[in-house]
Image: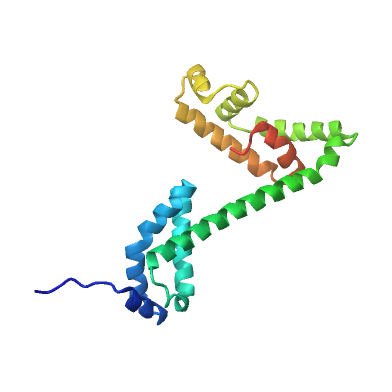
Length: 198
């Protein structure tokens, strides 16, 4: 009686080290879900977990000659996955610290005697851009940001669905972000107060 083919780790890693793409595909087919689940457990994001899967297998292929002595490939791939997840966390932490440090460098501007003049200029730019929004986007934006109304409350008052209100807000915020981007100080100091990170 014929027995099913079995993937022997030593054999497949030797084939992988030799640059055999079929061996790489076999490993991918067998382990990608394991890697995805391990990444998504920490990231809680299908897209980010998918990126980690791609990165792990890119590393596997790029360093294929280094895996010949690996005894438990699944365990090793999960360890690689954890390293990639931790690398993401470190990157986010670094970006957050850098952003905070940059904002701190702008503090003297906030404390400067002419801040009120600068703030008025910024406010004028923002007001001008809001006035350029399509009427319903403008109305929804002002109700949310100036009156502090929730999307549900705006939807009830304007007889719109909450989804439509959300779409209006998203488009308005995209327009404002795009046009305020050249004004770096305004983008960092004023927009955060308006919640324009959408």
